[in-house]
Amino acid sequence: MDAPIHDIRLLIALLAPLVGAGLVMASGKKPNLREGISLLAALTMFGTTASLLPAILAGKTFVFPLFKLLPGLSITLRADAMSMIFAVVASFLWVLAVFYSAGYMRGLDEHAQTRFNACFALALFGAIGCAFSDNLLTLYLFYEIVSVVTYPLVAHHQDAESYSGAQKYMTYLTTTAKGLVLPAMVLIYVLTGTLDFAHNVHTGILPVGVNHWIVIGLYVACILGFAKNGLMPFHNWLPSAMVAPTPVSALLHAVAVVKVGVFCTTRVMLYVFGVDTMTALHLGMPTAYFVSITILAGSVIALSKDNLKARLAYSTVSQLSYIILGVALLNPTGVEGGLMHIAIHAFAKITLFFCAGAIYVATHKKNISEMSGLGRVMPWTFGAFALASLSMIGAPPTGGFISKLYLLVGALDAGSIGILLVLITSTVLNAAYFAPVVYKAFFGKLSDEDAHHLHGEAPLAMVIPLCITAVISVVIGLYPNLLLGLAKAVF
Image (cartoon, rainbow, N blue to C red; front, top):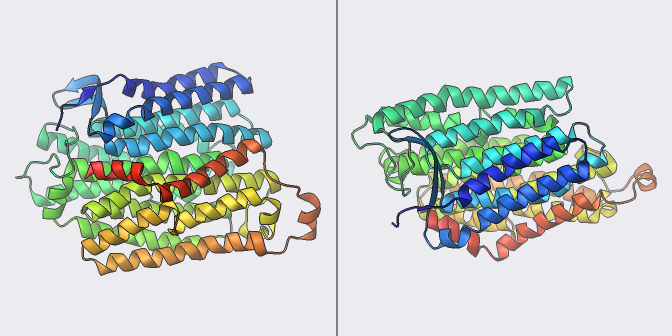
């Protein structure tokens, strides 16, 4: 493997949202300036990140050291194939989220829009920091930054419900990280003398002679400690955070928070423990079955929710575990399917939350039972919702079909009929909780009151981004080579 290349573009991509947040706060109450700054920061981060893609696809790795604390202990940035899957998607979706958020926040005349935009930018600062982390210490620090800066977003409405949801959000995420990941990180450093990630997914960094039970304990601590991954029983923060404005929900579920959770989890699985160690200790299949509980239970709970955002929240709880399951299969096809699902789920889920916000702005309706006939009033929004739903279900020709196909083949390659049945059952459940929403919207009877008062779509600033993300969900299914190339480069 070629030596990593030092490149300042990693630092530029990291600083763009941080500087953007500071300038947003300095912009005061000038909405056009504030949102222009956010857009410029988002474009800078995306452009800088995307410029690394050709070299990464050619097998190069980039690094940029920031601080050295002790031997084997530093704050260092690194871009490789796995980090790019997350970084490119997150930075691109931030560009669209800037437009969408402006339409949503202005449409509802929300308060504290400057604080909202600044915290939004800081959340992307934390997310890109996680994506570009070269070691477990850097990963942990940026993981914690994401938790802290998203608290004001969850508590945005500043009422009893939002404060309660935000408190639960912080309690779950910071307690698990400090109580499980931090001690595990200290012990890993004591055992190995380093927290740097391995150069490939096979070796890991733990010495061969370490007691097996210690390794297993460290592994469990890391899997459960990154609670942003939504694994049960540490998932309840996620639906509780739905008290936040819809752009925040989209950020939480598609771009920054939950993707940070599953990215950290799978990064540690592959680059700290490694495929060889996990195979030797038989950790893969128990992990796959453990996360299968979340996949099935999350889907069943989603079926029971009438509130659209709550249904989408439990869908996220379920879908995130596909990513961990794919990596836990420990074979190339399964890992590729899991990693591709990071991006595929991001585009589909942000579309669904964008649609939920557009529906609320245009109609002030939150519950699925109230949406009969709205598809004929808001055809673009519900058409996008339908496309994104197909991707979540895994229907061709959407991106979800590609990632689920790889997961199914990965389960067969692992010789696990049980995991195969889990994937099939969960797909049926996905259809069961998404299809009624689309059917009711397009084929349900529009009430006389709605026919009289409702006159069309949400503002274009909201509708255009959700249409773009919906189309991309299909384009990924038709042309998956870029995403597949990055996933293959990991294994």
